[in-house]
Image (cartoon, rainbow, N blue to C red):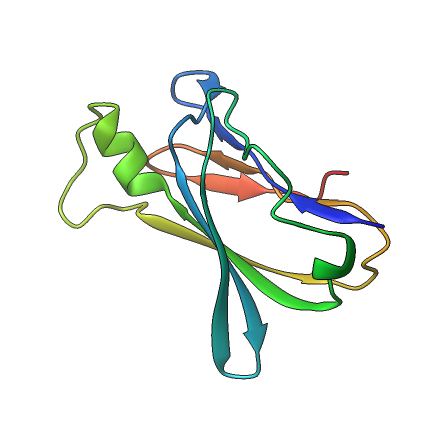
Length: 117
């Protein structure tokens, strides 16, 4: 069975993003259903997969990362409102038997993601 995981990389400091709030939502039409809240550990990862086994279903999902709060806690000065605040990554799971790793590479001014394994 597959699993869904994530991690955060802080490219301004060249280190894992520890202590980043992560929320996972299932998107069903116009409705968003909160499935899980987590906080990244010292390695910038969640301690366990966000979804695995029978929990992992085909469909649309969103990961919401509290990047702005993370950078504020790091002492990074930012304008008000923040340019990068909550980062929303909308993605789909087509085959729940596969592993889906959705990392966030982030700075106060930019972010990117990719599908890992």
